[in-house]
Length: 239
Ligand code: FPP
Image (cartoon, rainbow, N blue to C red; front, side, top):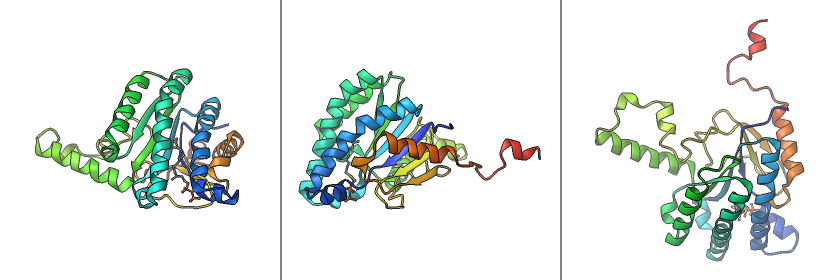
């Protein structure tokens, strides 16, 4: 089977999943957070090397304050606990997004986790918090412009590779497969640059029910696809 090196996931449907069970939305987020570790393990066992989760978007601040607080608390406690998980599973953890809007203690914990897990060479887990792809590109453009004005970067040096090196995802290969759970079929401002050549897989399964078997189905669907990148595949060239 052709296993994707990097899988990006838009975790969706926590709220609807909880509602279908007659429970409050935040219960869905709690169970959604609980699902993360199992999916990381299943991904690694399948041979996936990079996994990137969309946990909180720049637009998610528009939710009711109590829900935003509950999600932030869940993310904070997951990342605190993640030091142990990273060590146990040899997992490198990175966080992308504009972290300057997060509570300073939360920012310190993220930095400590990134530093302490930097040398682990198992799964590379990336979590997007206060992330929006347009915002990421604007931040990258600002940094590039400053470097140009400081004489550290020449305009002629700017190409796709250079631009990518200014994005939050610098050093992480582009996703081969994007999965979105819970029925919606849109990108919602997620990794717009990085997903240029990725395969997309949409499932009706809500995130809290998306376990190992669902991940395998997505990888099987990916494996059955014919990826061409606009060119011809090796065997077609010699026909
Ligand atoms: C998507 O469901 C969930 C979110 C945007 C909230 C954040 C995700 C978690 C708490 C999961 C934990 C993640 C990590 C990495 C620890 P939704 O609320 O948009 O669901 P709905 O579309 O049914 O309303």
